Length: 146
Image (tube, rainbow, N blue to C red; front, side, top):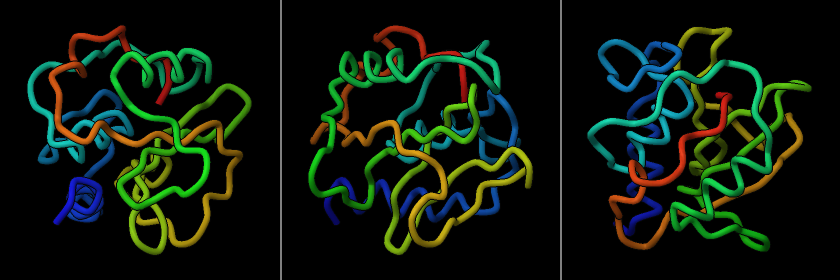
């Protein structure tokens, strides 16, 4: 199993995990950042203190770049992270999996599988570095949204 397949498999394994803003532990709940953290196989402290709404796509792009993620312009794949705009002030992360996406749904209060294409405008798609790095916790804080 390659890295992208492993990311997608970890995302699917988290479906039905409770939603918790700022959550990083599947037993207690996760948000979209916690979901991304877990699917990338990370551990240790991650930024917190952000709001459910707010932030800018520019800050997200800067964070992904500084963390070594590659923007995807031509052929998205499962395991890629998608940044979508679910509302005027609300950016959200999805993990691409075969047949759709996995994301932490605040309204349904759990991690869900979303079949097909996302119904929201896409702000960007990023691919994780080929090898896990420790840059996740050493880079600038996450933008202020989930």
